[in-house]
Image (tube, rainbow, N blue to C red; front, side):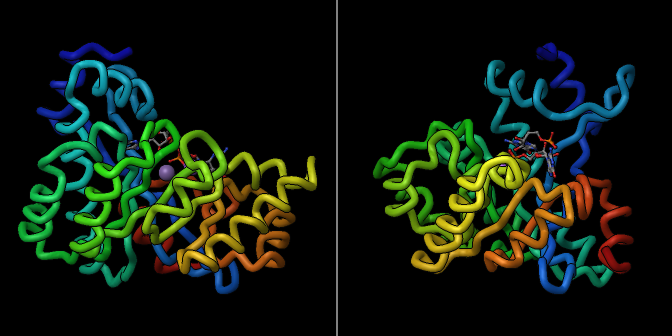
Length: 253
Ligand code: G
Ligand code: G
Ligand code: MN
Ligand code: NA
């Protein structure tokens, strides 16, 4: 676990950076979006993955501060992408602490005005650890966000909180199939059945279905056959810095 002082310094001294993992259209292989993933340029330890930072932020009651840094940066990156001719949307992972914060809606509106970008280019991913319940409070917060044009995605679908009653009741823009189902496609035929089921559910709910964790051409072919349109995974690219992402978006995967 990182120290509170580490975290405060990271925020104050700009040691945090957003990396971007492309979302790819499986038919055309064009980049259609990006998932923003936090990275920490630690002065001594180098580039760090965000797990310990997020855990520390949650335990020191700094998750919202960290989360608003991320959301502000994600909207600013949309401006940079547009200036470089990269016409995409971005998604940001949010934790329950963030979803329940009463300032979320007003802060997003403020960031949108500050950067002059539409919130319809932003998607929020509710992650697996999100102990989001099928409660009125959650549905109301989602409705407020969607009224601003913000898209809502359920991340890690098939694991954790994403039970079928929750999926049925929630107004959703995207379902992201958990990467374990995709990565283990060849080991167990039930994985393919689960992905097919996600595809059918997405059709019934009129929401996008995104496959995560695509690492092989074989997996790509199976997903295409099932009719999955959008995917992410190391086969295409891991999360990369902004300037690399822009370069990749202008070339071909
Ligand atoms: O690539 P990766 O190791 O970055 O991501 C690790 C985990 O951290 C993932 O589960 C991802 O959802 C989470 N994560 C990455 N960036 C953020 C962020 O900005 N906010 C939150 N809440 N979680 C994030
Ligand atoms: O929980 P969430 O889906 O937000 O986390 C994204 C995590 O998955 C990040 O740690 C990211 O680096 C990782 N990831 C993205 N693509 C792949 C992949 O193809 N294979 C594996 N093993 N991990 C991936
Ligand atoms: Mn995610
Ligand atoms: Na996921």
